[in-house]
Image 1 (cartoon, one colour):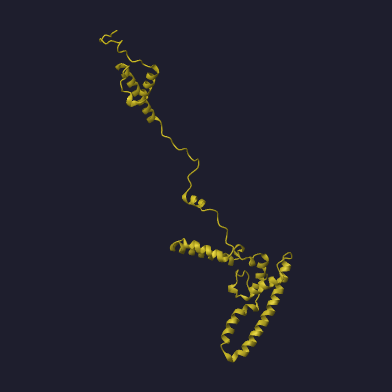
Image 2 (cartoon, helix red, strand yellow):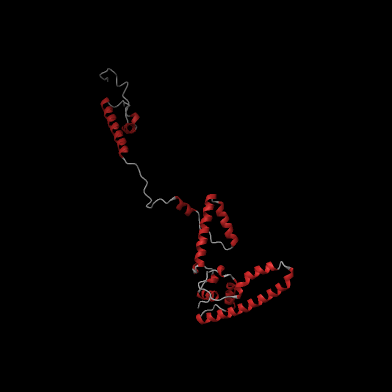
Length: 260
């Protein structure tokens, strides 16, 4: 048996083709763009050209889809981005408890000052001085918010008015002490100075005793339910009476001789 070319097919039969193997090889070639143009021996040129055009069209369609597909965006957090100082404040940790002693307070102030520049320290000192001045003015005016605990309350305010409304012998203590120091430099008057000092102390104790009894009596009449009285209130009145009128804090609200 021979074909049209004169080749004896009985001697040289054509190779047997396995359908499964041909299909697998054809699928692999179709998926690989670089091997699409390879001409298979069992296909004609027209079939190879059609498959090449189809694979080129599929590849171009895939690239077009990839270009059209929008880029992925990160979903929003649902809250605004915090400021830097707020984030640093949250990272700074828990707030330290207030100092319990004066030494601890001084150590903290020293540590805070070491972190500031010279201009910042100067500005901080000026601000603190201004605040202290304002607080003292309000305390001298009688604002109990800025008074120490010893001066607060209506009973203490009434006791101050009683002391300020009379002339007290104890108020001469500071001027007399200055005169006494100067006079002690004169040995000739040492005897008279000692006698004068003992007499002054005696009169001051008598006057302070009278002042304390008077203040306690008037407080019990004005505030019968008050527990503030006795020796503690008498000593408070005595310490205020010893100060010069211009140096008393809070500032006197009444003049000498006024009815309280």
